[in-house]
Image (cartoon, rainbow, N blue to C red; front, top):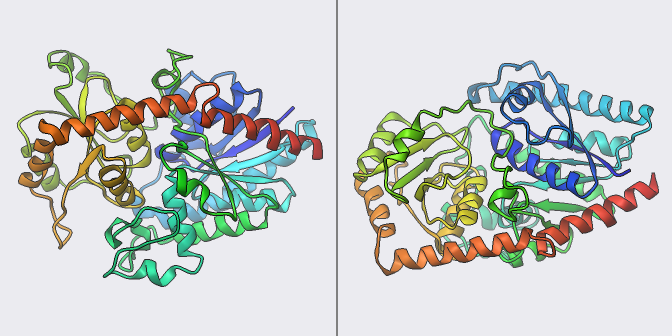
Length: 427
């Protein structure tokens, strides 16, 4: 039987798409063992039962069993690598002894050590890329001959097969001024490429769909990028499982006190505000956001888009960006870091489903009048209606991609049948 080990970083934005990926693989007859840290597994199993019986969960202690703080990121990443590497090796050896060996190891961003261990034990690996294919392309070119162009701060950036970008649109980790607690990220990405380069036929499974990023998915001949997204619950896509409305990995405890308040509001009158799991929004900035429009706001640290919303004010994390597309909702983009700046560019200029706030040159607080400007654009008129039309178009194409016979469905089935099947034959 085809059996894969899926290793993911214990963060909300990694757990959610990884669980959806695991569900879809299991429905194709693939046995999945899902490995992440104990702190994440504890919260997942107390907030979700949707994958019980379909996926085997394995956890390991990383020394941060009660969670970790971004202020201690360096120490946490070292501990995660040390404990996680041992857990991957122990799990692989244990399954071999049980007679249920893994045919392939699949891992997400920030845990390249999983790929290193698998390669050492002669197991094929694939990378589950949970950002856009465009962002993968940017990093690829950054590490392959386009370093100087991508470090320039005074000219537009034209890379083969990718949208034209301004320097400010690049992932924040590429900014020359980036010297923060996350400076371990680029070495992690370099390690990912080194692991892929050792594979005979390197495969990257991308949380996107063909119609959304056709050129970025095909321009890099060195790797096979397979679009298998959007990795969104079934109820919002193919509808085959109406009960599948949760990502199944909510690491943040939720309150339901807001439901009665929402019931008192008119349909599509609420703006959903989401800045993800790691962004820290200052009190002055939150006050400016609240003043930006005399309207109803629901603030969330992360999670899925709710049906009561008329638009989103979002950091443009990739999960939130895909949710907005699948929901057919326009977006006011307020990117903070990482790939969010690139995602915001794509949303405004290429997919045309939103508008971005203009940040002050000093990087300070975005004032209420700028937020109000964006909200007013979205609130009516031909431009707003065109964004809504575009959002509905991408919604329909996303759903089409994941239906049986759709591009993402076919890609994942091909991966399960041909790639994993061939792995099994070799074993």
